Image 1 (tube, one colour):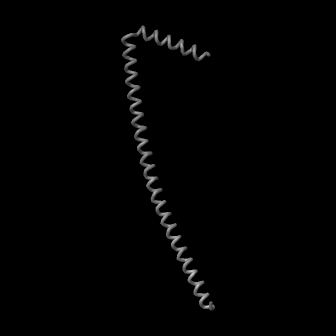
Image 2 (image 1 turned 90 degrees about the horizontal axis):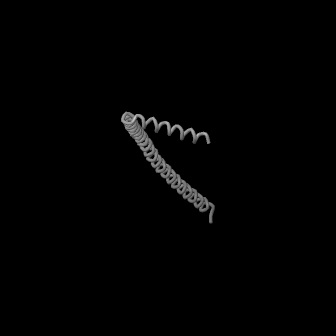
Length: 103
């Protein structure tokens, strides 16, 4: 092989290498773009889930408050209907709790 043939082969190899490098760089950039798009979608889904959980939390708190208000109303009605029985239940409950807490 002559010197000019070797130089052309080396130049062709460099072009091939740069072509491969360019293709790899493009592929890497595409992969990064796809990953960024997926991360944006995941972040959006996470924000929506967080907002939905906040709404569910508010709904649950309102339901719990409603249930506790209903229970309190029932207890008040029971105490008004059966005042002596209610005092007896309160005394028995206090005695049992104090006995359990002493142990």
